[in-house]
Image (cartoon, rainbow, N blue to C red; front, side):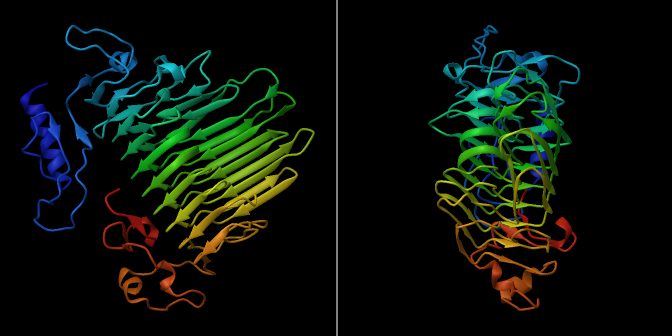
Length: 430
């Protein structure tokens, strides 16, 4: 690594508005608590750039993560820290899923440093989870960008572009990670019986803390389970599939379209499809979500919602909004909600808003919801307030005052600029 290359990375990081730490070695870049212009709010000190540990420069290096490979200087163990040093193009290249057994879960850190992993198509003939990693436990994934990943579905699969399954405790951490392009789903399911497909753009399922992550990629699955008479569950989310833990300051702008043929259920949502024990805070969805259920004997149902389709067992959403169109087609039962649909178990929707009128069974919670709601509102027309209107609590809409944003932090977390995000609120710094 040349001095010129490293100085260029410093320049790029500095242009993003953050100083280089002087208390760390030349291989570390760090967000500090002071902006370069001398102003701005204090923020927690957290690394999102790191050029130490074991360096990843090419597809071969990527495949060696956690393999025990000895390069003469380092042993590439499961608990090591790895740093991606450049964009890695996997177009047309084979890639075996990393950490295919829960007993060999990844426990280290992977820094993406804002570089892209392009057209990754991980495969395995045996693993029950799919992604760059099948299993991780207490691992950290920081500043990784997945560009047009492929997800290869098999029977009973938990899939994500970065991680299939965040296994048990301690939880896995995702910070400043994103997906762009399109997510291609390759269905390689064979046989009959119960088939469950759990897909999250970043992580399929398990115990997670996800902070300042996003998905801009469309997910289009034309025919899951059309192979035989099957039963099972399809759970697809724009950030997580069926995760629990916490998702904070994340958004989905990708469209999700799924056709499900079978006797089970499908849960589709912009942030996290099934949220058992999940708290979702300061998140939003602008993607359009469509679920089409085709009955193959028995009973099937489709649930579609902007934030979470199944907030069971103390699933909560705070300070979230949706502008995407939600729709369900076919199947025996269709439940559609602007924010959520509930199966009647405990959960809560607080300070959440549907910011655009949409034809729904129910604008907020679906037709059968018994979920606790407080200050959960829907507008009859598009609601694009200015920051001044929000801060002054000005009533400018016929149905709902801007005070619907009570409890939202428009100083540190949220912002509004009429020229960005179609005039709707967006998260600062993402």
